[in-house]
Image 1 (tube, rainbow, N blue to C red):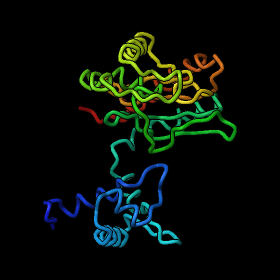
Image 2 (image 1 turned 180 degrees about the vertical axis):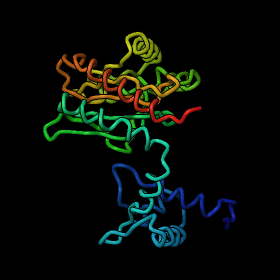
Image 3 (image 1 turned 90 degrees about the horizontal axis):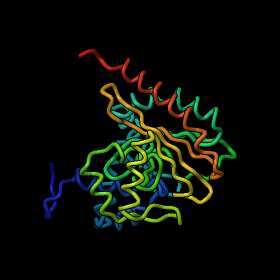
Image 4 (image 1 turned 90 degrees about the vertical axis):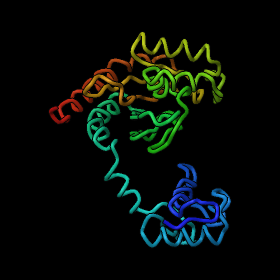
Length: 253
């Protein structure tokens, strides 16, 4: 594979270009891609052209660059999370029908929760999450569920911070986060009232795989009105249903 004078391969530079896009900024000029990746603009332009020719990137009407449909197709086809999303979706729809605000499914990815699916309603309370979006583990109910059941080394790394503050209610000290994780394990769910936005409360429960390991978090985002805990039974019932579907789909040993 061709390499630059610095030893970086063309593939590594192409990955940097694709990673320059964010959930908030899905279209970028080539000059901005070059700035974000540290590539010379001529190099960025050439690689963008090659990626576009393969359908991995696309050009908009004003020549802005965006992720191509082909990249989405390949990622969806090969994703190990596809079976999890498929198993969860019917139960997620049931939760959404009962709750009427936001219902979502998240998985652990590094030090973040990555959201695989989100169902919303027109007049639902504010929610910062989105499909393929991320939040720090300490911040949201989904993140706290995943962190509480995650590897001890990950817990210690997150506890060492920094713990970013979004609101006055956000947990920002190791002592408070350690206590919150212990509480999640004790009662079986996480509740974060006003941690991400003052008007919203997150409630999340663990989803377990065929070997009883926690593979995801199922959550709802509802108004911060003191009634969020009433959503726990419907979430727990849905999580058990997802777990049964995952176990049934597991090939025999």
